Image (cartoon, rainbow, N blue to C red; front, side):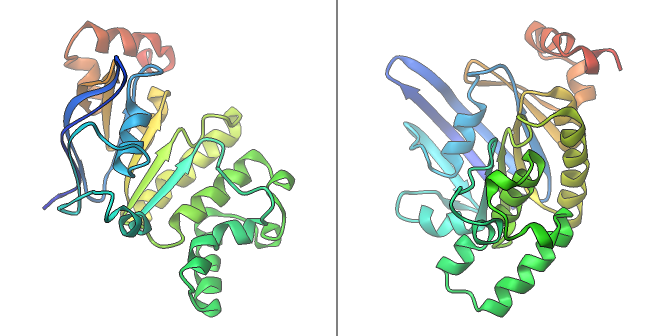
Length: 247
């Protein structure tokens, strides 16, 4: 089975407000899928449904062929890394302790934890001397690297990233985009990335999933969306992102 994650008829509503209409979608192994669309289109909801921070109203989500349920999600979460926009770091813990949180909970041997930590510092280009600093003593880019290392600590099969670079200044964001792309390639990582930035989606994603009002409008490469738009919304969305539309 090539798809690591499969959604079949998955939907989510809040009262009369539909966050996600019934959706069929699959995410291939070893590839990065970029979810993009206007605010409120359902892309972050989709991520939260996969990791079951939200329960679907209908439909089935499968991870590695098995249905994701309330009964097995705790075990499955150990196979999924999750990164959010502000990093979600615990301010009272050092960078080191934030990264090692789950490994310590699972009672990994100290030698194994330290070996994995050294691997992740090298992978993310994070200075080891900063590991004993607290989040407020780190730059925004460093905090996101810590969040990424924490998500990668258990060598997850799936990495979910919800606007991970959205709050960073352009130079730091560009550097982290480059590093993320190298990491995804080196690890052959299956990743689902939420972003508002079409250029970022095209750079990091093997495919783009464009959403609007709780529906998938089109999926494919940036060239597919440009040359074979599924409708006027697709063309208008690309035109609105001028830096991409004009290249």
